[in-house]
Length: 287
Image (cartoon, rainbow, N blue to C red; front, side, top):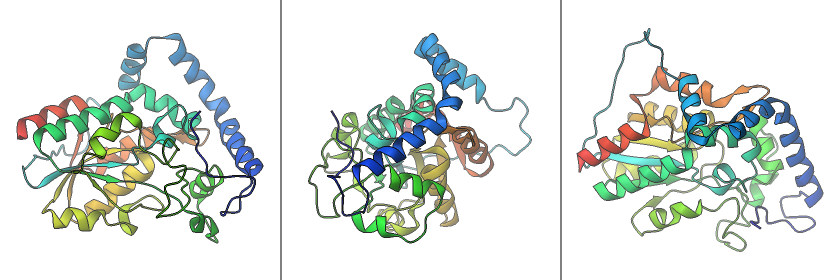
């Protein structure tokens, strides 16, 4: 069984196993009512039918009210950036699957991210990972936002320390297994961890600028949180950014559909909103 938390009875972050389990149960219980109907729909139809149904539900308007812009790929100036391609977000074994699983399944997110890795590597396009990790000292913050509190309570992305990889392999903070051959190929740039949502506190901007990158193809998790925050921050820093809409996904909770919220905002601010099929074709043609 995959181990997600580096807790014994009481960990350095101050949580007991019982408190972590209770927090996880509360998160899952809070979404049970909202997710039951959707889960039943997915279970009662084929995966392709569910995907087609989701595409229709989140389809772009037939008559857009806003100007339609796009981004071209410029070889040497364009990179693929993937946020949080980690087990806790994308695996059935992850601590958030109860809230993001339906959206991840509908969008085909896991496989679509891999398709982007394959296309970028084949085209020689630089790939950057902006991961999320929490260390024991992060659990001593004196105030948190709603989802920060949730992530800390359920042990999401937990590691024993920045230089400690004990219990990391296969934990919720680890990469999805199918991505490891792309991320750990000696060429992919793995940035320092972002701690809330955006790359404001990590070295993604520095790493991109030092490579002469000013255009970004953005994918990863999760849509209305880290992915959207990376989009906003990078736009403010002067990058052109195209988001790959089905290579991300969002939580569905009683408070709302995070994926829908993100798609609306992507349409309003991104330089391009692409499907994975289109992104792969564009990347391949840029080689």
